[in-house]
Image (cartoon, rainbow, N blue to C red):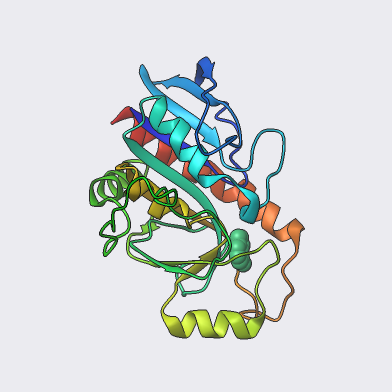
Length: 242
Ligand code: HPA
């Protein structure tokens, strides 16, 4: 089954029929929310809001392990993560969308592996952190929805919840990042450890710090979210339709 993890601006999937909600115990603790099993175009999919609904769990406090664990328990094998980001490269202005293919991880102090109780250990390959299959399906869904997206880009994960300094963004840009967000890791690595096909659809909601003369305001972010999330939802609907 397809799963969707909703990010900021996508805490409910209102266009789909809600079939049921499922609550699972996880050995990793409490997830952000129960899993909603929804139906769109006759196909079932699972949905979980990363930051909770209606609660607002900050990026560094999200129980990424429990969230992925309950999605796997509800039958998810193919997972799309929706993430709001700040744009760094030229093509990623507010309301533009990317399907990243690489990750830089600057987060710290987050539970980032399932292999930490001594009972098992695997060093999973993470050379290509996202599923090629899910990325291709996302790109093809975007093309069917007639929405142009960047299909190769580097996602930098920062700790948050504060935004970055201009100097941090210069450094992250020199490191090779095209966008910056707070929730892409450890989610992607945990999905790999749990054997889930996982990819990200990233919506730029602002230019990253220092790239324009303006300060970053929640008002501007919310405007870009409202404009861009419509396109993200269209792409997701095309993806689910298959
Ligand atoms: N930085 C980090 N995370 C973000 C940003 C940003 O500029 N915008 C949305 N999420």
